[in-house]
Image (cartoon, rainbow, N blue to C red):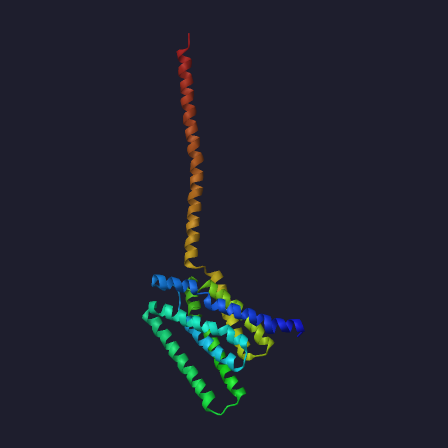
Amino acid sequence: MTGNSSVLLTYVFPTIGCLISLLTFSSSFVAVLQVRRTKRLGELNPIPYTGILGLTSGQVIYGSLIKNWFVFCANAPGLLIGLWLILSTIPHATPKVQNIMTAVIMILAMYYSVIALVTTHLEVSNEKRNTIWGFAAAVSLVFFYIGPLSTLVKVVRHKDSSSLNPPFSIMVFLNVVMWLSYGLAIRNPFIWVPETIGGALSTTGLVLMMIFPRREVIRERERLRQESLAQSANNLETPAANDTSQAASADIQLATDLHRAYLSRP
């Protein structure tokens, strides 16, 4: 690896990754603010927000332990944002979704508590401790990426991508590209392995959005099509009406001329 490419992959890419991570976690702000205003979720799926909480919690701890400030800075803001997203949406979710989100949060708390207990009360080396937390963080990242799988199945079944958030999906894809490149560059499997899985799933989501447009987009296209057809019909009727009017005027003029010729005869 050349010096320029090394700097690009180990410094520039993770720096961009930190910014994209912040944009990724913030990409649902507009949708969630609308939920807070209308008190209705609509097509928004809030379950992945629990994945943000789980992902960022593990990555903040792992980044701190290995003293990787790129990993830490990319996820610390997301931890706060994830809490805000959950607290803003869970009151307006259906009882089923509320139960799922509550269960996920409880499982995450128990999951990290057990890992903390194991790594602090058992005699493990710093290297083993970092490995354990790296594995735990990677698992939470994988679950974050596979969280929307149920949504992807729904998109295929109903041929409607309204339940997918385009800004969020695009940001996740760009984020994956940055961190996958960085993980490969520093040869950290706890970064590049889950990012590979995330890349495959985020690409699938983007492809589905292109294949199955959102329902409102379909309705708008149909409205424009109907307006175009109506305009075409009006354009066809207008010349015919003009021709009829002109023919009637010609007949009247002809009759008038004949009447005048009759009156003026010797």
